[in-house]
Image (cartoon, rainbow, N blue to C red; front, side, top):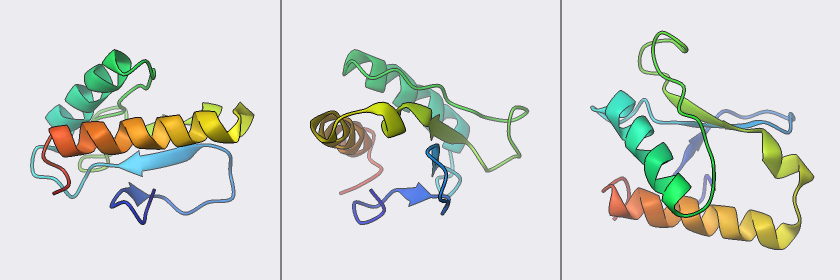
Length: 90
């Protein structure tokens, strides 16, 4: 997902945190991203201030460690689709 343009906190933990802080409207973007992901059938929660530090809006993805490879591919495809729709990527 980092190759696709997402900022992810490096870790060896099964929870993948995708960051939105590099965008000027990161809180609004994170919330809209969560709404559109749900429309794609993938439930995520946006963590924004005060639940996380200012500019550190993120999504934790704890379920990726329990899924099959094709489910992971589906999730990554949906993340990329929504990111393009919201103007995060060209």
